[in-house]
Image (cartoon, rainbow, N blue to C red):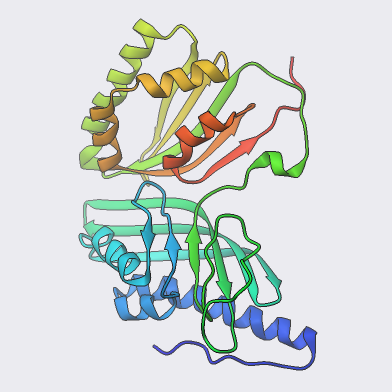
Length: 285
């Protein structure tokens, strides 16, 4: 699979259309190549110096490392299907940033299915000589990329950069999702119960701690409420590391929504969760 040939036009409006078509082509070829287990096809869409972070998977730097990570993550799948819903394309000269909704469905055996949703940010760059652009990409957290290459990141922008200030609220609420194989659900549930027992015995500042589930497809919904940011930080610090590690081996963390004022320390603790959207206080009882 060959990369899209670079095309240029003296008309800026036409060039924008050409660039948008090339970006859409790269994203579609990336998803299709993963579904077809075509590692060479995946590599053809990536910059040599690509940097990527997928939810709870280790960060990958370089096209070989990212392809190896994708190969390992899909090793047990017998079929898979990625549906990419493109929300936004922003082009600024030789740099572009896209935001997409991604739904991934994988099947390992007729009884073992895996489903996840995420919001992804991809950045691409173009240079006449095929090298990385000299100017940094304007997209937050993205590495520079060579032509027709994508740099994937699930990092959410800092909400405080908008300059919007809401009314202070003491309590913190988080709402998130995760998925796991049905066969792993009993062990996952035991870990959840251990978390609940520990919270009940040691953390009066945890006001709500709920787990819900959907059967088809299997999605776990997590709702937590804390009396304050400091108590939220203490909670994540008290979770038993061995059980958290085992949980992350069995589940795929989906998007998380954080409601409240989140200091830098708390945002750093939540960074391994992948895509976290921060919602600032406005009005409350």
